[in-house]
Structure formats: C-alpha cells, structure tokens
Amino acid sequence: MLARLLLTLMLLISAPAHADEAAAWAALGEGGQIALMRHAVTVPGIGDPPGFRLGDCATQRLLSDAGREQAKAIGAALRERGVSADRVLSSAWCRCVDTAELMDVGPVEIFEPLNSFFNSGDAEHEQTEALRELVRDWEGPGTLVLVTHQVNITALTGVVPAAGEIVVLRPDGHVVGRISPVFP
Image 1 (tube, one colour):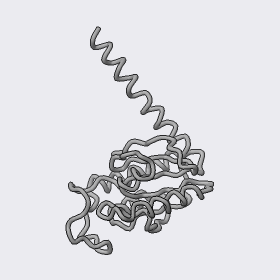
Image 2 (cartoon, one colour):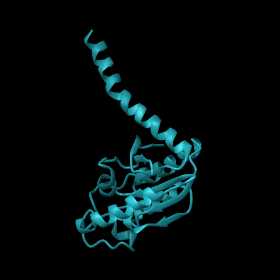
Image 3 (cartoon, one colour):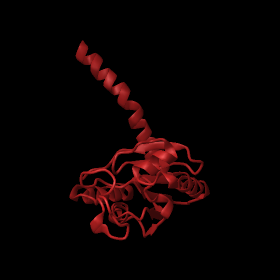
C-alpha cells in the first residue's frame, strides 16, 4: 500500500515536468521561439580560474569529454525533432562557443550580452536588458538559439538551469517550458 502511494506521488510530481518539456518541444517545433541554453557539461569547477582571459581557451574552464558528447547529442535531438535554427548566438566563453558549434545547428555568432557576468555583477542589468530586447524582437520563422551561462539565464527568466538544459521562451519573454539536458 505504501509503495503504491509513493509511486502515485512520484508520478504526480513528475507529470508537470513531462508536460512542461512536451510543451517546450512543441513550441520549438512550431518555430518563432527562443531556445535559451546553458552550455554543456564542463570540467569540475565554478566560474573560471583566476587570471583567465576571454580570448584564450587554455585559461578558461572548458567542456569535458562528456560535455562535448552532450553538445553533439543536443544538436542531434533538435534536428531529429525538426527544430529549425534560424540564428545561433553564443557567449564568447569557449565552453559556450564549443557547445554551439558542436550542436551543429547553424553558423555561430558571438553576442556579447550572452557573456557571463558571474564575476562582474555590474554588467548584469545592461546585458539582461539587451538580451530581453533581442528576445522581444525575434520574429522567426525558425528558432533563435542562445548559448550562455546559468547566471544569464537566471537573471532573464528566474530559472536555474542544469548544464545542457534548454529553457524555451516566447518572444514576449514567457517561459514555455524546459528541456532536460540530453546525454548520449
């Protein structure tokens, strides 16, 4: 009896997450939406090593082998579901650029408002407003793919995403749903 009650409770708790993910995939399939993604899995750590330089990947925290495979799997999942990326923008951090390029859903452009402000909170408001404007102005017809960092996604949406998670937005900034990280 207790086992059945626990199973029912677990199903009730997980049902909204599945519905949320189904709504997110459906919205991306329709086009005209925004796929706001946290970079794939990195080597262990938070932020970047002291003295890192944005133009030098050797000084930054990078994707792990699993993260590189995860980025490829995310791109494959998007393609398998018929998601058409009209534009792919990335933070200049190597882990974001590598994620976007390994997804292989379109040419990758650097968009500075997607850059991390983890160690520079002064930039948060200005970058978030620029990102909000980009989202608001998106007309499609395909999907706008944005690869960035947890702090940027949280500032824009209030969502704290896992590595490789996609938060799907409408151009009005409304969160349609979340797509769990894809692993190969």
